Every structure is written in C-alpha cells, then in structure tokens.
Length: 401
Image (cartoon, rainbow, N blue to C red; front, side):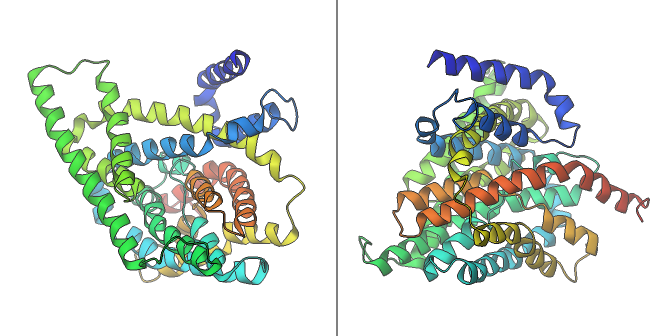
C-alpha cells in the first residue's frame, strides 16, 4: 500500500511543477494521466492492481464531477451567459434530444445485442458531456466569452438533465426483462430528479451563503478554513439531493450558480480551493481509468463498437448541435466548434457504473462502448483543444481565412 501511495505522490508532485507548461502545449492533462495509468497498470509495468482500484472508481468520479460542476458554475460569468442565453438553451432543448435520438438509432443499427431500452440508455450516457475535459477550451481566454459560457452551461446542465432519463430507461429495461422490483412512473422520476436537485442546490446554498456572509462580517472566518467552505458545500448539495432521490449533479451545478451570485467578486477566494481539489481528484480518476479500465478492454473491441464510438464523437454530436443553432447569431464555424467540443468523460463513467450495478443483460456491451468512446474522446479533444481554440479566436478577430 505504501509503495502505491509513494508512486502516486511522486507523480502528483512532478505533474504539479510542470502543469503550466503542459497546459500551454497540445497535450492535455487527462491524456497525460490516462497514459501514465496505462503505463503503471497491469498492462505494462504492473505497479498497480486494476481490480482493487476499480472498486473505488464510482465514488472518486462522483466527487470529482461534483466539485468541478460547482466551481465552474460559481465562476460562470452570468452577464455574458444572459446575453447569449439562446445558444445554450437551444443546445440543451434541441441539440441534446437530437444527440440522444441519433445515438439510440445508431445503437439499434450497429449493436444488435442491445434491447431497444438498452440502446436508449447508451444514447443517453454518451450524450452527457464533460465539464472537466472541456476545461482547456472554457478557460482559454482567446475563445469568445459567449462560446466559453455556452459550453460551460451546457456541460454543467446536460449530465444533470440526462440523469432522470437514464433511470427511467434502466427501470423500463429491467421491467422488460422481468427483474424490476416495481412499476415505474417516468414523469414522477423526472419531477423528482430535477425538482429535488434544484430545491436542494438553491436552498442549501442560499442558507450557506447567508451564514458565510454573517461569519465574514464578524471576522470569524480564517484564511485556512475559508478553503473548506466550497468543497464541503458542493458535496453537501450532492449528498443531500441524492439521499432525497434527486439529481446531485443538478444540485451541485445550480448551487454553484447561486453561490457565485451571492458572493459576487469575493467568490474567487473561496472557489480556488475547490478547483485545486477537483483537479487533484480528476488526476486520480483518470489515472485509475488508465490503470483499471482501459487495459481491460484491449482485445474486446469489435469493428461495430469502434464505428459507433467514432460516430458518437463526430456526427452524432455535431449534427444535432449544428441544426439546433440555425437561425442564431452564431456562424457556421461557431456551430461546428460548439458541436465538436462535447467531450465524454466523468459523467459517462459514473453513468456506466450505475448501469453495471443494475445487472442489465446488455450492461457489459454498453460499458465497453462507453469506455472506448471516453478513451478516444480524451485523445481527440485533448489534442485539438489548443489548436481549435486558436482557430476560432482568429475567426472572431477577423484574421481567419
């Protein structure tokens, strides 16, 4: 155990001292983490046992996603988002259903071992985009503010929106196989998941914001303990909403939006600690993914699965987003850029673990497709983030072709 901790600690230290240099290159952090995980895992050096680490992946991915959602939402520039609200609204209300539908149809065509409900589940899982993997674009100030705000809002909300539909189709799939414990009311699930998530996220954060302001006015808050407030609040929003059968991801994101609004300019001193913890957890998550997950799919990928993964990252995502943004102020190049940067990551990993826990007949096939798609997304979106961010900035500065 101590040897594994030593390896992780040395790796984290070495990456931390070169992180700035790597972030300026075309190689993204997650690519480095997954590649290092593959190298250190059973496939190459054998320093870690994949099966042991795999057991904690769900909890690790959950915590990472929650902290990133909350901190990104708190840092969101709402004034910029409000001025272009039509863009993320169309991406979520028109583009997202289109991505799910196309993914569903493609699954029926290519993966004939999946039932109709399992095909829908796969479409839902891979419609969720990752705020963490999109960070390289969202944080790049060369990219126009409204594009970054739109991608941030979409990635923050679409996984939360996907959650209730994921549970609906899992319940329907189990009912179809005769293993469901009880009948399901889809409308009730949607109301519970989204409604409870909103109420918990906004309610808990509002109370916490008032208490935090009161503490600051009395001078009770210390510099050290101020760094604990946001991580604790983000996890509390997620845990309470989940305990009440709501969406913890929606609670975390809406809580972060309200927190940023309540704290105003002073929000950054509180959010920075959550960002640091989130980055550290993300590093561990992608390391575990490389060690315990990627090695396990070698040799299992079929040509149908490979084609599905490639189309999911391209046509299935880009076409609905492009169509959803017609008749808006965005140019064709803007729509292609927004369509391309829908990386799959932590949310998809969490969702696939939920599916595996449900013991669906097609669960292993779904997991294999999702794992391959996430792995390809890490590479494709990781290596294109910097060049395409530079390209889109040139289009808006008037120096593009």
